[in-house]
Length: 202
Image (cartoon, rainbow, N blue to C red; front, side, top):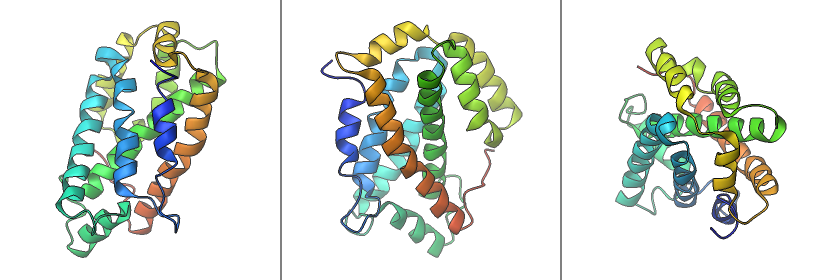
């Protein structure tokens, strides 16, 4: 692998905003898609997360492709559903963006923990990141399933070797968190502004 698992996402992040500074749908989806191979490296431990992220990305992309000019801006997808009163549906793009953002919050928290706590095991880092992100939105069953899955996480050193490739992993991972994290916070801020940031899982 040329560079690290973060080399291409970092390149794509340069194109994620319009000239006016708004988040563009296609580049945002593309950056998130580039995280799927990273999630894949966790194997069975993250199979449910990968399926969830993949499904939400498909829903957003399908809507975007139905009218690329209309949905060029990411929040245009949500505004259209707010206007048609379909945003709260479990099959809405709003719901997809919310859960995609929460899953990505978990990944960013995890990357932070791996950077800031070199002595932590992968299970420690994953469990801490989960408690700071997804846990409060999950029901008891989902939380229990996650706890079981955490027993299957790969060895920290092996994981970092695989995603590190031939580049400077520490620098790339930190840079990714610094550039991608604010986009996720912006998503939450926008969703909160339309009263849709606190929907829980069924």
